[in-house]
Length: 406
Image: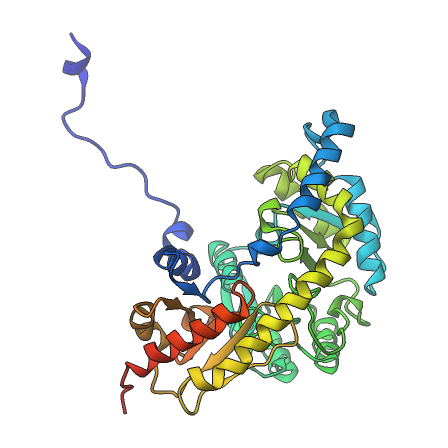
């Protein structure tokens, strides 16, 4: 009997994807970037650092030095927790910024996005409740959704989450954690003031709550004074996980982030990381450690350029957005947040605006609850001031071509 005669006459369907994979969609930002990849499009949609500002020579020199001096180490497996020399350099940097830290307090991750995934693995059971800001960093909503968590937005204002509303939700929902980007938040660009941070830390101490404090943008301050991390505040010492990243201040292609967490949680995340990728690439870690000595000078150059680009966008917005629109004035970071009159739906408007060769991100996907569909996010760091001015002219034309409903 031949193989063909043994073949089944029917094909049984394969088992389905996991429910969590079916339930969580892709990133709308990634989808928009794919649609607007044409070079003629001025793209305010992405959260991309300006590539012309990458320190190609300095980073290349760091890689050359590592490969010339310690090639056996650089090309070998590493420890899950991260290369000791990088953790020591990071610890010194974090300590200098106001939070006493040792190398053993840190876990190096493959981008800070991985740190969020590891925390979800270590802390969340399907059905657990997670509290977030409104609006919230989109990729965090994806992580928590993929973990099967129930995500609840905390009411707030221009200063961030409302501590009284937070306390009420903690008592009612018994959440595992509160996720925050308190400094130059994505998507709004707002910064939580010190007094509000103290009140949030007090709620976490009193009610028993993990706080995940994500800080990828904190070094990109253009004016105003630095606000202390929540992790430095009394009562927060044993319940705040601080996340950082080299993506916005060195290069996102290195995929280097870090986590500072209490020992038991950090060990659980290390075990989760072993199951994911064993460790973050050794070569990238050693090159970054070598580059740390020149990082502050590079960041100062980046801040100067990004500050000018923020100012160019702020100067052009009054003429670009319809009457009655409002927007944030971020003291740093990469984004600002605009709210058009209520009659506008920025999701519906986007295809018409893209016809003018400019793009933004509609605000709706950033909400865990009912979205404000009149909102949008603009990234101001990727284009030059002249490109920003031209992009805002195009945005004005795209919005002017629309007659909003009464």
